[in-house]
Length: 207
Image 1: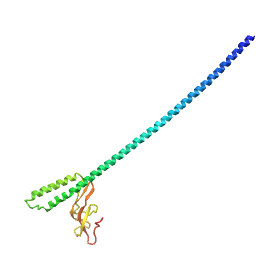
Image 2: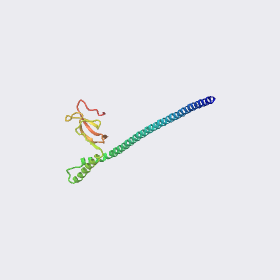
Image 3: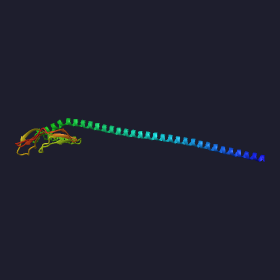
């Protein structure tokens, strides 16, 4: 009888130890799982932080590329503008130096006696030179201002004198003393003109 009680007690102790061991194992497993979850959460946080930093770096680099491209485009446009200004200035200056040559050719044509057979070949040569010269410079944007019979335009004409005339409307260019020229739409030299006026009024030559 005593032996049966001892066996039963031993079995109960074994069950108790098994229960305790099982509970300890569960606690250890839970703690291990908790540690693993904490490590995963920390790793996810680190990865998300690294991703955010990488995205911010890419955004900064993209902004830098766009700014650099905009600066390069602005620099290119400024350079092109400066080159164009330099080209126009050089062309205007060169064209201005050619105007006296044109004037002298025109004076030679006007002063030559076309009825004189001896000078006709010379006159024809000068006229051909003048025509070719004008045709050449027109290719580079030079255009003639010859306002004979037109209304006076202070933007293109310079009134050298005014004269009453019954044959012309007031403010009409009666005579062109010196032709003017434009280059690429800009005034190079105004035409010097004589302007008609009515007996009671005139034109504002200072406009």
